Length: 113
Length: 113
Image 1 (spheres, rainbow over the protein chains, first blue to last red):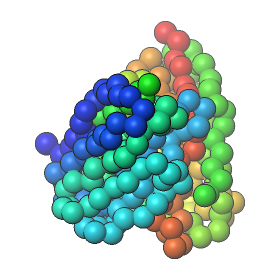
Image 2 (cartoon, chains in turn orange, purple; image 1 turned 135 degrees about the vertical axis):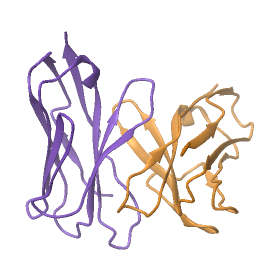
Image 3 (cartoon, chains in turn green, purple; image 1 turned 180 degrees about the horizontal axis):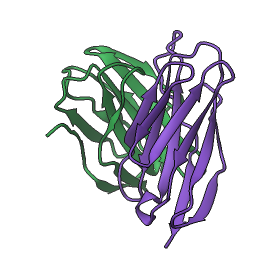
């Protein structure tokens, strides 16, 4: 089954404790991206990747890192999480950047206390 | 960052009513327009990806039209059902030096049985 898998689904952590949210897709998609969703602000892009070893900042990259060492995986790293990073996070993948539909993961609800 | 406007923000309709919403986006440097359906507690799912001016796409009772010259798209739902209750997101893609999909804040539809 074609899917984008994120883990964990829910996470409560403390300020400053490094964490990684994993994202994996099995569709051989080149384009992957991370979004955060906050009430009243909609989906905002954090980082995206056009292909292996090619990543770029989205609209709200501060406080986040990503890597794309393999085509299927695109982890999101929070080196020192802060409460303003409490949000719902989605990973998405697509065959091409904007000309084909995006497939979304199940979402990760992160709370930083 | 592309300026994407969706209207209305929310609406309530009776079961059986037909309804429509609007997505406005910059008409310059247009490449594609995406529509997604996002049910509560689930992930966004693609409805349509449209690229051609005047294009019309249909999936069951849902259809969409595209006007790239004036920068808008309409989403229509015919004979709304309670299961149509969701937030509908649009996302234009320009592809002009930016490989980002920028989402509008969505239209939240509630269908009252």
